[in-house]
Image 1: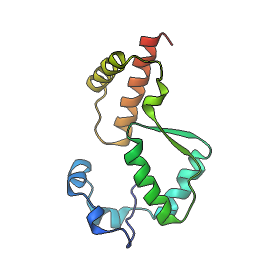
Image 2 (image 1 turned 90 degrees about the horizontal axis):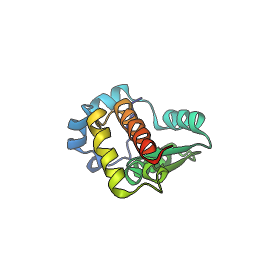
Image 3 (image 1 turned 120 degrees about the horizontal axis):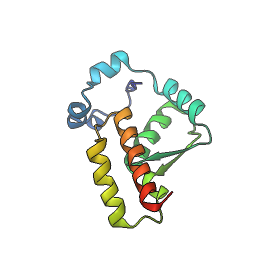
Length: 131
């Protein structure tokens, strides 16, 4: 789902490199995006009281804050660090699993591909721990 930018978001928040990476222009978002209010209501309905894991929680948290602030809606789910799912994983084993997951299911900065990548990493780390 695309998010329509609101008027109060500053132009300097728009990153041309991110536009190129994702292949989505600001003009397209303005035309095809849904309002922040609509997006936040849908997210809260789907994720209420859930723990949502991110491989970039600081970055994703920043944008979630901005989105929910624009919608004037309180977020009803927690955003947590994906790496915290593996507190007992040895750093070298975790790094090896990340490398293998990247080879099998690369990050593409697209939701489906990135979720597949994180799922692969989760399975690989679990295999190394014997889960």
